Image (tube, rainbow, N blue to C red; front, side, top):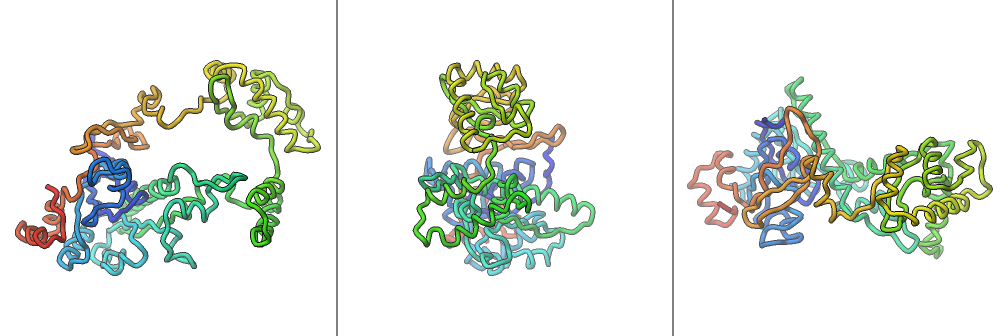
Length: 418
């Protein structure tokens, strides 16, 4: 069955993660995605390099694409690439600020030739404001947005670049929405996704201010203006934040609990589930049992309950606790390391991972497309391309004949990886 994007041409000017991952999702949907790379290739070809020109971080964001490797500083090459982009249905880009306009590859220039063009752009901080022209990467934007682990001994970045991946998903969703609009109006448009907005979205549960609940936030922000300048330690600042925040009885019912042979995650936030958990584990919690009752010191009480729960859960195995929680209807699962998921039977049963054969690296296992469709399925068809593997064919589609491509190869301004 053909994918939902079959017949669409995408030209991707993507580096690192967000834009390339969007391009990969479109390719999984059947679109013809031409990835425009420099002569050296996307930087991720060298991240976790397995063989020359093929890195782990390139493999997992660029499958199903064609590679066009060129030097955009060459006028003849640039003219061909502009032609290719102007003929496309979709352009996906994360150029450095100002770079697209200098090359004539910006939305205004391309849409003047092709009003049906959908131009999906990924920026760091958004197109407006004092940071609009600043460069950004996942870890930088996560820090700016406060999306970090705030440990008393110092902040640590999250282990995975989730801001980039969220931005890539938003780009793909935006492209899909713009395609739907184009079907009704016949017109394309530009869409922008900022890494900063993606970071805020990932914190949607608490990225808000409710006047009657969150006055503590105002006090904390005022405190931060001078805290470090006045010599406050990081640990003291974190302690002050925790002191000001309204406290809830959470840790005993939501999170990770130690068992006799590992850890188990539970999610029993609703009161009926808390009551069931009290029965299954065998502990007492008056705060949950008697609505309206409040302890004198909520923080100390919550810690006391959590310690009581942990004292019980360490007396049995993870598997036994999982069976007990499942019987009571309490969501739970063993805490696993990512390395274990590659062999996980639940992952395998649903086809959440895909096996591909790469022409130089060999067999690779990758994450499958993240949405299952019954009639227009997404699919990982081919592994990521070798650098410049499709340069000759792509330039031919831009109007250059074989002799012209031969001249460009001889001048060293394109890579012909055939």
